[in-house]
Length: 365
Ligand SMILES: *[C@@H]1O[C@H](CO)[C@@H](O)[C@H](O)[C@H]1NC(C)=O
Ligand SMILES: *[C@@H]1O[C@H](CO)[C@@H](O)[C@H](O)[C@H]1NC(C)=O
Ligand SMILES: *[C@@H]1O[C@H](CO)[C@@H](O)[C@H](O)[C@H]1NC(C)=O
Ligand SMILES: *[C@@H]1O[C@H](CO)[C@@H](O)[C@H](O)[C@H]1NC(C)=O
Image 1 (cartoon, protein in one colour):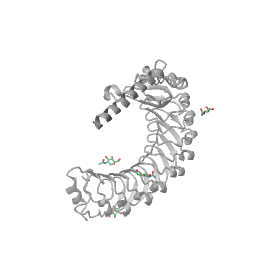
Image 2 (image 1 turned 90 degrees about the vertical axis):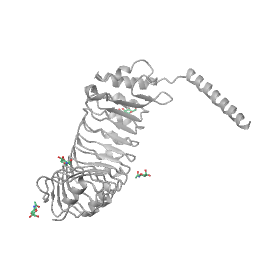
Image 3 (image 1 turned 90 degrees about the horizontal axis):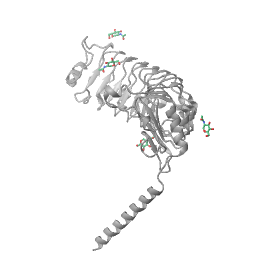
Image 4 (image 1 turned 180 degrees about the vertical axis):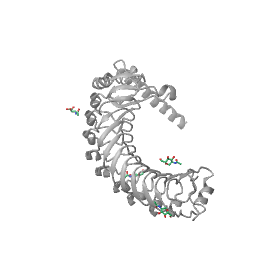
């Protein structure tokens, strides 16, 4: 009986809540702010061609009603998210889609914006508008795989709430301004596949929360900064295909969460130290096409999760380490070609069953 009472009570509360909220919805439907709608239409106006047909859904007055593809709002009708990604409808149709035009500065007036993603549009060119530095609530800024040009606007350094910044796959160039080191909460930074040059700024030292850093396929010069070794939560680090020189800072080998490390195709020198064993979570190690020398340390065999090892095109010398029987249990792919190692001319890539071959090849000479 007591239980029944409760059931009735709950039912009553539930149904009156529903009536109440239903009335609310009828009385004051969320309508998008006039200012935000104008900003979005300003963006649309600068896109002169849209074969994705996303923007053709942007009609009518209520940009928060759910019809405007890619637009998200808060309960007061302010736009909090703009997420425009090239539809991935199979290679045949998806790859032909694009938006052509420029990024309107009017995007910088979407005061409440937290997430801005415009990616894969291929033919959006011109600069990243300075006005984006007014978007102080922004936590995610992703402008990947467009044709954006110029440098990163200095003002972006003010966006101290940013957690993810990706500008990869554009035609951005120039040195990275030190003021860009202001993002204390940054988890992800991806500037890959552009033409950025100059050193990795020393102000990047403040990115202590970083989990993923990709600067690959640029023209970065100078040393790998020692402070990278302080990014204890880093799981992904790709600095490959740049012009980096000098030795790998020893501090980097203490990154216990790092699972992917690629430094391929730079001008790095020095040896692989015993401390490599500190990279406990490592699954993939790519050091090819550098100027590394010396012997491959035996401690590499204690990397339990390593499945992909590529040290090709360096100056590594014999003898190869003696790998214990249980060493490198996860290894699937190893490439030691084009070094000064006595592996025989046919040795280049080994796949399963790699373990026996690997042991064989690693026997001392
Ligand atoms: C940022 O907003 C302020 C105030 O609305 C405006 O005066 C300024 O021009 C904006 N900055 C940019 C770079 O658009
Ligand atoms: C690293 O990750 C842990 C666990 O998610 C978190 O508690 C810690 O605050 C992170 N450290 C930094 C510097 O962000
Ligand atoms: C190792 O890296 C080189 C250079 O990037 C590449 O050509 C080769 O295919 C890689 N080896 C394997 C096994 O992936
Ligand atoms: C390659 O190894 C041989 C024999 O160990 C040595 O004599 C030679 O100097 C090495 N060459 C280089 C470039 O290290």
